[in-house]
Amino acid sequence: MKQPAPRGEASTLLLAVLTGTVDSPGDALSLLESAVGAAVTRTPDILHDDDLQLALFCLYELHYSGIEGAGDDWEWNLRLLGVRQRIEVAFEARVRDEVVLGELPDATGEAVCAELFRMTAGDSGPSMSRFVARTATDDQLREFLVHRSISQLREADPHTWAIPRLAGRAKAALVEIQADEYGNGLLARMHSSLFARTMRELGMDDTYGAYLDAAPAITLASNNLMSLFGLNRRLRGAIVGHLAAYEMTSSQPNRLYSRGFTRLGYGEAATGYFDEHVEADAVHEQIAGRDMAGGLVESDPHLLADVLFGAAAALAVDSIMTERIMAAWEDGRSSLLPSEAMAP
Amino acid sequence: MSADLRNEERDPAPGRPLNSGAAAPVSVVACPDGPLLVRGDFVLVGADGEELPRTRRTVALCRCGASALKPYCDGSHKFTGFRSDV
Image 1 (cartoon, rainbow over the protein chains, first blue to last red):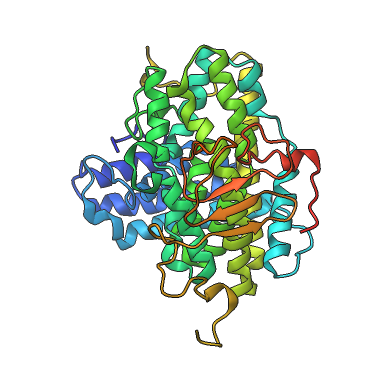
Image 2 (tube, rainbow over the protein chains, first blue to last red):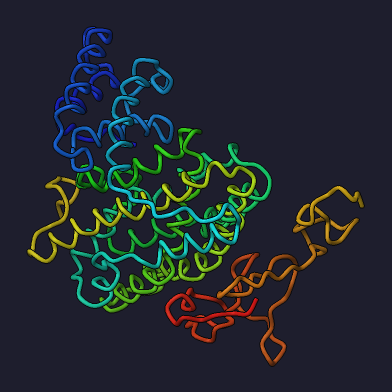
């Protein structure tokens, strides 16, 4: 991924350390540690903190595609892992504050599946998919794709971290879902390839991270949540619940997104990504609820609360993101950060 | 077949490869209040015997009648209050 523009003291220091533009990396790391320590203490809300969310995103990116100009050795640098953990602790605490779990269901596959379907049916926030279907302008479609591009150009990767951490029925279910996400070996049907094709149809850059500078903190937070759950084995229940919630809230919204692109005159090359998800996720939500999440809880009942937390966290953070985007659009503003990436 | 295997671990077609190639056995899961999930080696045909378009190995077939993608499920059962006995 190309280097993003820093958004404050922590991300400035981090990018300087990673790209070797400091005289003394040891001194710069010390400055970074104290800057992050101060920032997590004084941030009014880490979900909307551009500096901290970008720093966390970059630290996670070392485990995905890397960052241009950053040496690969930084991935397991102990001091950077320490910095990551400082941000993660505050981030996870903030997300846990946001989530209220009801009474836990029985630790059976059927009960877990039913509870996940119940939770995902109760989504009460503003509907971005209905807005896109009926009202969104061409510019708003592009904004929508910018927000989504941060995750969709590497679709499925954060949940793949969970595969070696599961066993038995839950693992077989996760692999069945992920194989479909990756196109069952056909590059053109890989979901990230389908999304890239949609971006190209709208004349956008389909390079991973091309629009990162335009993505606000909450969009990065939605992505960081998946990496937090995926990269920490103790949160394996949460990453499974997160995926189940995503699969269960996908079919109908994607049908509406497709309708919006059709309304504005785009053809199958643009809508293919969304059409694929209507059908795919109606399959995946059944596998995810019963066999993956339900199977995991049946084999390890003490993960029940974590699975439901992961699902609730996915819904809560994405609901905050949607509210932000919709509020900007209702005021006639852009939902993105000012960035050269969006210059025509 | 070993008697101590749990049900889901039993090979439904001993001696034939599971879920790979032409001999993969077919299973149909009736999802409560939802679709029929079909796995394995099967052919889905219309009334004229012609194969229907299909892009994935495992499919969910509509059984509530409300899908806009029939014969496939599109999740509509969740919005119509569809209830199944099984």
